[in-house]
Image (cartoon, rainbow, N blue to C red; front, side, top):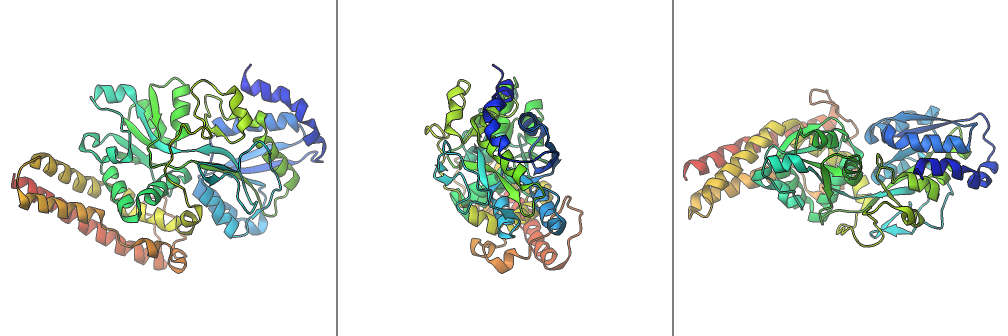
Length: 443
């Protein structure tokens, strides 16, 4: 039986929940980063249970959602925040912009991959689990005579130059988690070095996270760095794609919470209860959604081959630190944009020069060329700040403004710091390109 139809029929079994809440004629306003392909089935199922409640969905990116909730706090008209990134919820929690829902479900384990599914303080609930990895187009790779990348390290290889797509963490909460996961897994210096050399192989940085699976599906580029459900949903929808979890990944819950001063608090809590029920959780396995339920009972009817984060089949080596991620959320986004997004051409030129020099060097015994290449690599990898600085609360408090484009003007102390970073990376990428070209000329 169609999963959505099952949910609608199952509303009869859930009438005890509905009857306990007086919500006639209410509007439930949901602020979310999720696309309509995800929100519409839940909206329809919930409205079938509660015919007198009209669900209104406000769609914004995760970072824009956080900013919107912050800016409208004194005159809030929204009830629910619904998004993937737990660090975004931590930001709102720290600003006292979420309230405890009091909603729970006994069929949901306490953790997934060692990570708590629900906020230990009760300010938000996990409703789905997700990992981060590499999506690839099988036909594209076959045409280019390329193999699928299995690990993050693979994406640094010269053979993938121009074949990789990714969004920026400042534009996507799920991408932010991906960036932070590798930094936490490999350490600040090594993690950022990998991101730079991976970015050197980028075809482009997409405007939104959805642009990455779209680019892989259409063959605009062959590999995309995505949250798992993008790859799983595309595959289930018939695209010639697949998805791989690298070992350096984390399984992290996507979340839902009630916004402080919600006009329709009871309706908001009922919505969360519905999300966590088996009927709601089974919607996550629809082909167009393909997220991992957190309610263990939902897996009894899972499609064949559907990933299960509770049976050990997903090897996630990173124990994600949401507090660390939240503390430096805007700092990491600014670093990525300054070093990668807005200087992508300079970075690609430097990385390509290194790749070509290393190809010419091969196994040759040329100490001078090898030293020049090593110096070029070090210049590309150099960071403008260390990890301790990124976690300094006074320093991180400076980073409040977000660019939508490289030309956007940011003033004050944040602008001064970013200008200093930019000057450093531009000089480093230029010098790295020169050194790599010099090495190549010796071979």
